[in-house]
Structure formats: C-alpha cells, structure tokens
Image (tube, rainbow, N blue to C red):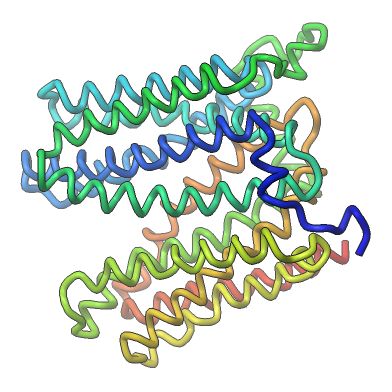
Length: 404
C-alpha cells in the first residue's frame, strides 16, 4: 500500500480548524432547516387546510436554488468565505424568525422562502471550496464522507425533533428555535473559521469578462457543463440521487398499498438514511482510496438493485433490511470525489460546488414528480422498480469514467 493510497483518519480531518467550524455550523444549519421546513408545512396546513399548499411549503426552498446556482454561482469565488457563509446563516435565521413571529399570508411566506433559497448554492459552494482548499488527498474524501453522515443524522434529528417541538410548543415557537440554531451556525463560522482564506478570483487582477456577477455566473455555468471531464462526473452523481429520491417519495404510498400499519412510511424513508450512514462510514474510513474508486460501480448496483425487489412484496422486516442495504450504496459518490476535485478549474472551484449543489437539489425535486407520474399510470411498486433499474443503468458510465 503506497502512502497516497492509505486511507485518511478522522483525526487528520478534524485537526483542520476550518473543517471543524464548517462541520459544526453545517450540522446545526441542516437540523434547523429540517425543523423549519416541517414546522412551516404544519403552520401552512393548519391555516389553510390545503395539502397542496402544505406540500409547496415543504418544497419551496428546493427548485429556486437553480436560479441562484446558475446566476449567482460565481460569487463563491469572488467573495471572501467567512463573511459570505456567516451572512448566509444569518439571513436564514432572519427568515425563520420572520416566519415564526409575523402572521404573514401564505403567498408571502413561500415567496420569502423561495427568494432566500436562491442564495443557498452560493453559501454552500463557498463552504465546499474552503474544505477543498484545506483538506488534501484522501483527507478531503473522508471529510466529504463525514459531512454526508452528519447531514443524514441532522436531517433525521431535525425532522424527529420537529415533530416533538411542534407537538409540544407549536409551529411558531419551533420556527424560533430553528432561527436560534441558524444564529448559532453564523456565530460558529464568524469566530471559528479563520479569515485567512482568500478567493483566487480576488487575488487576480480584475478582468473585463468577469465584471458582472450574473453574466460571469451564467458563462461559468455553461463552461462547466460543457466540459467533457466535468459534465459526466456531475451527471454520475446527480442522476442516481434523483432516481432514489423519487423512489423514497413513493414509500408512503407503497406502504399503504401493502396494508402496512400507519407510520410505516416513515420507517421505510429512514431505512436508506441508516444505510447511508453505514456505507459512508465503512467506505470512507476503512477502504483504500484506489479500492473505493474501483468499487463505485458496485456500490451503485447495491443502491439500485434492492429497489427491483419491491414489486415482489417482501415481508416488512425483509423490506426494511433491503432498503438499509440499498442506502449503503450511496457510498458510490465517495469514489468520484478525487476525480471531481481534480477536474475543477482553480478559479471556478467554488462555482463548480455551487453548481453541483444546484443540480442535486433540482433533480431531487424533479425525480419525485416524474416517478409520481409513473406511479399514477402504473403502481408505486412498479415506479420504485423503475427507479432502481435506472440507477443500475448508470453503473456502466462509472466504469467508462474510470477507464477514460
């Protein structure tokens, strides 16, 4: 085993001060956002009695990120990270506080959520750029792994805590608690993230072609999506996540169709998240980088294949086990991280991470819509199997990426 092929350790990753600060802040913010989304959905439904408006409240912050990613993404490389990221969390805190304190019309509430969401890829891209600059080699991949694990845990805790908080103190007080968590995240970034990081674009002489942030963001996004090395790496990460998100959106309907007890849908939705935690832990910490990269197609098969079994109506314990196993397949993305980082242009690195986040959010919003339509025409079980088959079909592209 060469030194370069030796797996990194958590000690190496958490020894980096910038990573510690961003890890803590992001974990707080993701938990707060999950709580905020749930509480706002409950608040909207209680005020309107409309399932549609409640669903819109749940998803209002996803698709608008496309606008921010495409038209504001270059700001990640033009502005200093610490004030940009701290400002992002502070704005999220103001939003949650406004939703909790003010008796706003539903249309105004959803508009505010959508507008603020436009900035999310910018803040996320800046944080990802800092981590990519501070962690090198396999430490960067392990950092991504532990970030994925904390995201899954924070989402689960945020949703679970949201249910408890809303039941105990009501949705408005829960929104204020979410605002407090966002404030804590901003404070962690402001005082925990070193101010030494300097944008590569700010370090260069001003260039006429980068004068306007919107024009620069659009041209940069087009250039990145046109790059023959970058585009396949983006699609290889976006598409499986979109397919699986679409399948997960049908778990409630699938469970009801099988006659499972009420609440089983939540168990089915949590099972892949548990598998994701396990898969990222094992692959990130114990697999050599070269083995992890060779195993990406196999992990992708593990992600999709169990979904093909659902039309056969396995017993509930077997079904939950299959979904946990499927979730471990999300580790396929770790094997792409070194190639993805190597393909990133130095002066567009932050924008590439913003674009990655934008596409991930957008396609995870579109996936449930497409597979929901398939389920309407056929059945939830068959639509989930279609998602599994589509995921499996991406695996050959990963082999071609490695051989290319």
